[in-house]
Length: 126
Image (cartoon, rainbow, N blue to C red; front, side):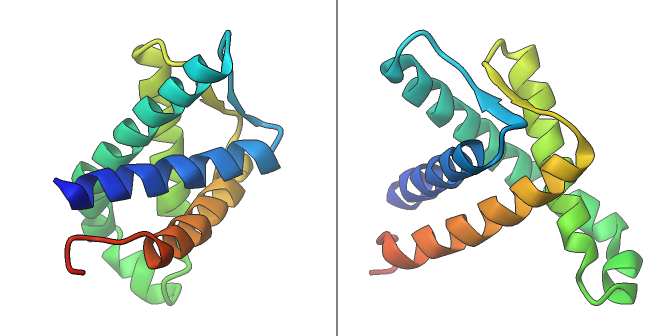
């Protein structure tokens, strides 16, 4: 359970950095509290997408991943971010990613920040 909370917080922090850095990734709310709550819910959706859908997409795109020496992972990450944006819209969460290239850059930012936060934050193995 502790590991799940740490991963969700890391995802929320990484999403917050992407929202802060890129104008075309938006998160809106009436107040700061509502924005934080929305960010946590979007982080949960993002975590579910990454744990359920991403492995299947990576399996089917394995030849492209090998052919591009792993660079196709950027496209997979962008698609997961776009899927999260679409699901957030369906769940009436005010999170939106505008365009594929924004999703590519956003996915790269989220990957780097999430990795850095996982290094800093404790997990259940400690």
